[in-house]
Length: 209
Image (cartoon, rainbow, N blue to C red; front, side):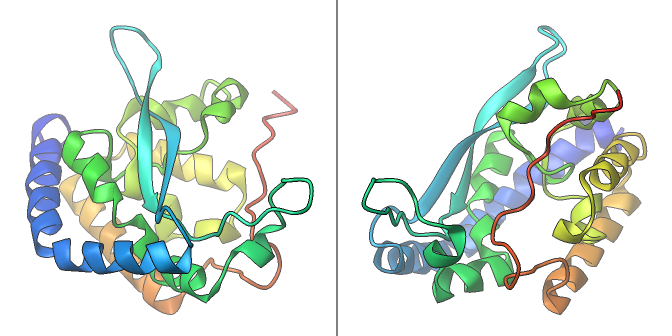
């Protein structure tokens, strides 16, 4: 009952109310982003969503976030390294997870849920094992079990194990626990490392499969 009906209803109602209540914050961050990023304050990228039961393929949607890195290029027109593109405002957005706020629009539209496996890159789709692909049996989330328990400090394999575990153990109690743990993780700034590399190590597939 919760997974099939109530979860979506709750997502719709809360995202609707949140968009109205947080509208002033969204406007302030949008205007600040225009100045801080010297242009478009939004980052929009195609991501895979839940597997469509009719086609058997992941639904591709446009993820919306606040931009955290400036589009700085070198003399050849190529983007410079991430550390030079990430300014103080971008670090603030990531540190507080405020860059994720526009995803409320994705939740309202039904592309995402508040809780679920984080939507990754479309180019990773051919690299998943059959087991790992089960992470797409449900809508991707604003936060998930992996984000609440390690964020960027755990391996891809650990993330996928947590993601698939969640898809098989969805409940109202589990979602509340994940949201609570996520808030604690954000407040403690766990799983964020701005001193080593700005770019999260890419997933290269399962070489042993």
